Image (tube, rainbow, N blue to C red; front, side, top):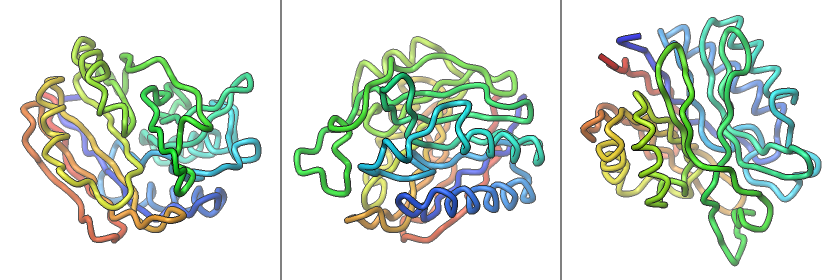
Length: 245
């Protein structure tokens, strides 16, 4: 696909309000596709946000309710949807970004370089609750070579170097960042290093103790900022046609 219309979605995903968030994801995906999007990308932790209740709210992938429901939505809308959740497998818990399309589930990435916060404000001490993944790897979306890493992964030089060696054609980079994405230009430098367009997402709204202000963005393979959403705590569907030629 030489050109792909992509929607980066920032919305207020209420902590632990799983069913409410899934309803809103479906509505936002419908609106994005009606506006022409083929790929619809949500932020890290979309389904339940940060929570200490992993025993109750973490889900298996691909057999959990959220993945099954988003598979149905993607099939109905003929689109690809990427979203974040807390995943459980064999007693281990992961921060995962899930990818589903018209034919169903096809990929998930597990956050590897976890964030350590000794104070655990807003339940954001990832080391206390989650297990690490194994780092970026190559997968395919609509015939396009892609890779993914999540939020603090991008602060690890090893992560960026591993992604660069994969030679992807597009990079998915979801966030769940307190406040907004300050110094957004630094994400462009990562795209330039990897030499691939980068899709950055972040949430808005209140995440326990923090206001999250948003900041979705498209970057070119040369690190140029192509389009960005507001960082004023307003929900937004940012649509841009990604030129992969």
